[in-house]
Each structure stands twice: as C-alpha cells, then as structure tokens.
Length: 349
Image (tube, rainbow, N blue to C red; front, side, top):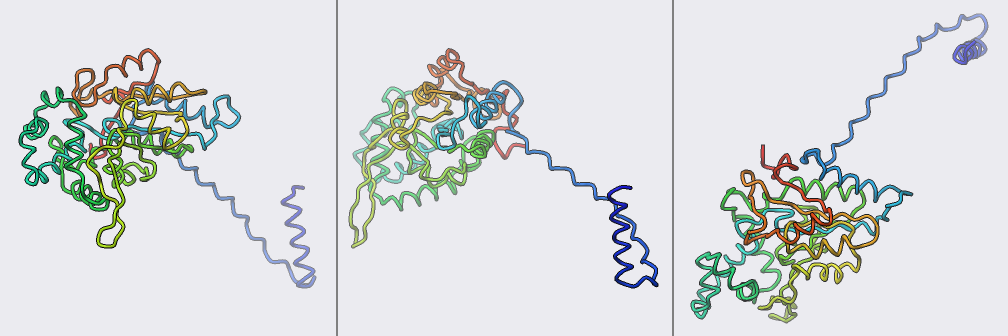
C-alpha cells in the first residue's frame, strides 16, 4: 500500500465517523495531476551588443574571478572600483571634444564684450576652426581663453546653460543630440559591472561641471562619482544670497598624469578596472594595472569609420599611440569597435 492509498482510506474512515455509519461515503474526487512548473526564464544575455570574442570573454572571466567568494582572485565589493574615461570611451569625441564645442559657443556669445580677443591668436584659431594652428598653440592657452569665456556666472546658471545647450545642439555628422552618441556596448558594460557589485566612476579630462548634469541619465553614474577637470569656484554673497561663482582659471586638469592623482584625491583607493581610449588615459591604466591581485585594463580602438570614426596614432583628438604600444606590451584588452561591437549607438537598427 502506498502512502497516498493509506491517506485516502484514513480520510474515508474519518468521514464515516463524522456522518454516521449508515451513510455511504462521498465519492472520491479524482486527484488532479500536479501542474507542470513553468520553465525558468532564460538568463539575460551578458553584454548583448558585444560580439563573442577574446575581448568579451576576458571581461566576463575577470568579473567572474573577482566576484567568486572563496576564489583566489575574490575582491570584496567595497574594493570593486571601476573607472571610465568619458570622451572616446563612453561617448564619441570627434570631430572635437563635445565640451569644447559647447565652450566655443559660450566664447562666441561672450566675444562682443571682449574686443581685446580679436588680437589673440587662440581666439582667431578657434573662430576659424584652424586645427593645425590650435595644435601648434597647445592645450594650455586654449583652455585659458575658454575658461575666461566660461566664467563669471554662478554654478547654477552654468549648469542651466549646459542643459539648455544639450537639449538643442546636434552633432554635425549624425544630426542627433550629443547625448545620443553614448556607446551602447559600454553602457551595457557599466550595467554588468554594477550588477556584480562594482562601483563605477567617470574619470575624464572634461570638467565635472559639464558632465554632472547628464551623466546619471546617460550612464547611471551619479554626480558624486564624476571625477574631472575643475575650474576655479569661489563663494560670495550676491544680493544677500550665498552663491558659488566660476572663476577664470582651471584649478585642476584631470588628464594624463592628472587622472591617477584625481582618483587618489577623490577615492583614496586604487581601482581594479580601468577603461580608456587614448594616450590621455595611459597613466590611469598603468596605475590600475600595477595594483596587487587580478586587474583589468582596457582600451577602445576607434577603427570603424563607417559607423563612427576611424583614428588612432595621428589623430588630433583622442590620439592612441603610446597607450596602444603599452597595451600590446602588457597584454591589456584592446577593443575593436569594428569587430567587437554589434552596435555602437542605441539608435542603430
């Protein structure tokens, strides 16, 4: 006799005792077959906009290794820090850094109040979009003039000017808002890392003031996790109200060797993963890769002139030369946009 048969007999006996022995037991209800359990939903694909290949496999292997408790490479969640350059790594940067285009628009708006700029070679080169002349002048005088044109207003007013500009300005090649030009595969990578206990930071040569208004919506990175160049800011009272006002100089340039300095000042910890695309990211990747334990250093190579832009060693923007050589020597991951990414932008069909 099975356990089920015994239970049926016991139930029938109990019914007779309750209703009286002169009554026939109620007919048995046929046992309903157990419902087939619904199939478990298929797990979401990992990095769906990435083609299968060495780059994707190495990323997944790294994440699995540092998140496996008890494993030799396990890293506690508090130390799972990943840093990302912005220009050229998380969104496009050609034909000119997008913040530069914004600052140029601010420069044009401020020019009528500064007739002395007409004799400034930097102003002339910027007005003429003379890339060769700007290259000879170097970064410092360009930044100095742009900083002057982007100063004097409160930080709240400047924040609004950035939001207003991004709402209307369009990229000259794609004729889409600049915030549409974030890289879908990198956004998936940010989500993938955060789903595995990582804290993600932007570490960019661009200014924190320019990135903070839109970075959270675009990348899921809140303002306090944006590290970048900083323009002078001072406290003052205006009409009895305390305000912060932008000064005419940069207080810190978060590019090249400045990036690991900015990370140290802001975080006090060495990242275990770093992502960039140019020589301006070299020192950040070097410092990250030099730490103890398992590390990941990755460069995005812009080699898809059809879907985006193609450039590396000779580019005036986002030059990838020394960092590329270092990546080859140290076996860092180099991502080919053309070969490793199924899609570059979310708006692609």
